[in-house]
Length: 387
Image 1 (cartoon, rainbow, N blue to C red):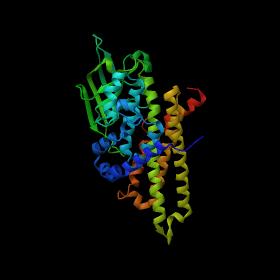
Image 2 (cartoon, helix red, strand yellow):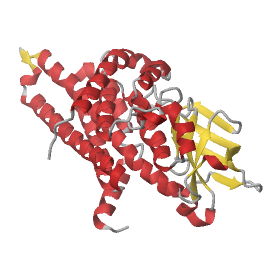
Image 3 (cartoon, rainbow, N blue to C red):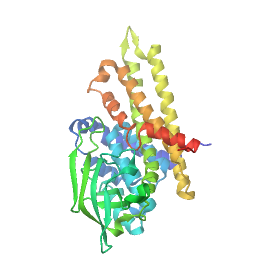
């Protein structure tokens, strides 16, 4: 087993780190405070290929592998988790879904502008009454009598990038009698009539990543914009989430790393009782635990990304490994952020330092794209074969 990164992977890691520290880190606190969407840095990131890391060049992307993707996403997240959220949704949930299940025409039309950073993509699965229980969604898509388009009605909630998205991968019920097998997937052009955006949600963390509710009122979606066949939507959603969870794991690793590195530096410079606090055993214990969990989370994320790369060739599933990585990394992010606040004490509670932002940002990684409770169910069911 070789843990050495290739020259290309190391190069992209360096490029991402330099971009994150030069363009993202200096504005992170400002955009966190204002809640504004960082259009300019997302555009610049798109020009460098960050918005379509695994997307082939013929569709406007960088054409890199899954390991490069998690390396780059970690670097962005270490600078600002909100930017990483936008990057993750664009890459894993939106572009990844269309690349895997879309037609050539759909890839050219809907992937290219998003992968190049010229447009923003979103993923609409959750509804006000159905989060983890996605099969109980109520949004309906009815095929018109002439068979040329679907008429979609319903609400979607907690849509990342919803307030600014140009395109959206959306799931709706086409046959209510079939439950999960009656769900279909659609590519939505958000600029067309019939799509209404709700207010931007006032969130605890990742505040520069805009989130809102979406309502569709007699929205007309052309048949050629359906992704896959009718009834395949739920299976598509679950497979897309497998990849999405790897992205969230990488984001969580980035948050955990930022919290750890800030704590390590502070423990060396902050003095109490005539000595650096890093010489105190209680602080050393926290730092050691943070380091162990961080390395474990990163390696599990790399393993899941490596399996994802193999899946492109042989179609293998990586549901189990993706859930393990997401669960471990998200809980590591929360653990490290909590420890960082404690190590920084009063300064950790102040907005003068980014530590409190890491704490707020870390929490969402335990919730979106499958809560920690859902990840434990997925892992146990994969291992036992029981439902």
